[in-house]
Length: 351
Ligand code: SAH
Image (tube, rainbow, N blue to C red):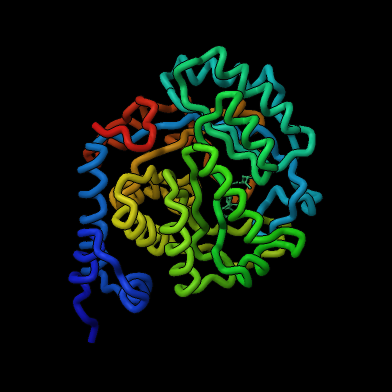
């Protein structure tokens, strides 16, 4: 017999502290009925803070070169079949120009840790965007860098930084990354970003090889410690020519479960409906929003490069995932009772 666990969901909704046992029940033992209840509560909390508007961010994938060799990632340096490109300053500014015309107020620059895109180069890019668009938010997602580099990015005008912690558990981290990388180093970077005053995003994949509910519990505890302004949650999806190419993908159901739990635990956080979830199932975006997500990040990279940023197989960059298809995005949001909100959407700015 399955117990009714709505009382635990109610406690979480009320902001009460949950113990380990309660979290483990939420992570692994909810009935379908309880899960629907959880999603409803989470979407309600999101609407309470953000209304029915969904923030949009223009996503530029600035390089598919990477010096790291993460086992899950399609653009790891060890993948000799990966197609490589890097955007020039001119191309990036061109994308921003288009993003501006399309109405975006946040630019997200994401990429592999490309040795050619040095700290100085990033600073120059940020300064140029800042100069051209004094009022827009600039988000960076360019991996692990030094304290000095993060400080220089901040002073150049970057407002936000995305760096998923990937997994809080050190053993699990070593199952996902070569030993040259460390979970602690990544956490240090996150703490630095927070201290420098970046709106900081973290998060993890759902269903990555070796992941357990206990590890997810540790992830949630870590996020409680970090207090991120943004939380990115998407399913693991295998990428060809990586050590995990034959592993199975994470589930959409577990992904939306975690989105809802995090929405209730971090009511004001900016939580995207990730491209990974949309790539896994055709209505992934809607599912995420109805589970409490409140951001989408349409791709604005040059069309000919998009398919090369192949961090996992069959990654979507068309339709509602494309910045050139905002009408389609609006229609899909309208169909579930939501609409695009073109505001900057900083943390703590509520409508
Ligand atoms: N180099 C940057 C950006 C990485 S890409 C950084 O280190 O932050 C952004 C995120 O995509 C990663 O943090 C990872 O969680 C996710 N990702 C990478 N490979 C993936 C895969 N195979 N399936 C799903 N998500 C993946």
